Amino acid sequence: MRDPLATVLGKRLGTGQRGFLTGTLWVAAGTTVLGVSGYGFLALSAHLVSPVDYASLSSLYLLVALIGPGLFLPVEQETTRLVSRARALGVGERQQTRQIARLSAALLGAALLVLAALGPLLVHRVFHGNVGLWFALVGSVAGYGGVSVLRGSLAGTGRLREYGYVVGVDGLTRLLPCLAFASAGVTAALPYGVALASGSVASFAVALALTRWGPTGPEASWSALVRDTASLVAASAIALSVANVAPVLVNVLLPGNPGLAGVFAFTFVLARVPLFLLYGMQPILLPVLSRSSARAEVGGLRRDIRRALAVVGVLGAGALVLTAPVSRWLTGALFHGRAEVSGLIVTLLAVGTVLAMLVQVVQPALIAVAGHRMVAGSWLIGIVCFAAAFALPLDPVPAATAAQIAAGAATLTAMTVALRRRLRTHEGTSS
Image (cartoon, rainbow, N blue to C red; front, side, top):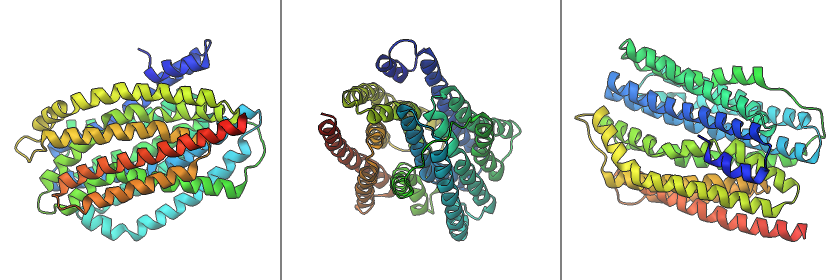
């Protein structure tokens, strides 16, 4: 079965692109494995560890998803944009790749210093005294720091099969040990946490073996590179905070009810399953849009965006219909006798997911037309709305749900307005 995005973009690229279409299938497969590994981690550990340990593990999962990708997904995206743009213009990309690798190393050093400073707070308030989970978090962040530039280079050069391998290894390295621990009846939290953290480290090793550096080319402007990457890092940190921190806040705000906090974390992650289908869009869609932007093909940009939005519309409709019944069935089976999350809350979480899916189309389009600061500004508006929702007189779970919807709607609106203005500017420049 063909990936819908591959079919859509295949029309844009024309015939003779079998390798590209096959590559998108590998990206989709790797992303699916990574997504399944997260749900497997949460589901397998739920039956075996205590409610307090499960709250710690679910917080670790969300922090891993927040800090590693939050800091280094922008590095991957900017590498993808630079490499694909250089290739579209017929110049080498090696020098620019080296420059952004240095930026990534500096960012990793700063991140490790911050994690060290926050160690006591994380260990005592979030991990309930389990210092080993803090070390797992540090290892995961280090792995993401190493793999980000390599994944961006693979995507930018169109080596989508290899990109899929790297993402799939991340997921399998998480999932297989958790399956073994669950089969052996392991009830301690730390082994599951170490398995979760090892995925990014293993994917870095595989990516290092698969990456082939291109020819030397012109150096990028350091000021523009730092500015653009910093804008994307700020945007990504905010975006992933909005996407993942709500269950962590619920865990902190419900210290006397870790059971409800754990169930909400599982439900929250489950409601965002459709987003994993869209995360595979970034290494496929961004290079296509970047090439069109480099060649001033505004009409092609508009067509690709519309087609990607059509795919999101179909996936989003399915999410709204299926999320509540599937979530209620799974949480009832896995958390029998614990607190429940209402069907209305689950459906509203699905609405937040659909809004996030739409953002996943508009954001790479805005990056492709060099709207980095506009991306950051849009997410800043979003997180202000997120914080405002938590200030409402609501219980923690409804407040977290309202925050997701408010942030998604505000961010999407701001990005759409910015993209329309940017495309009009591009049309005026190319005419």
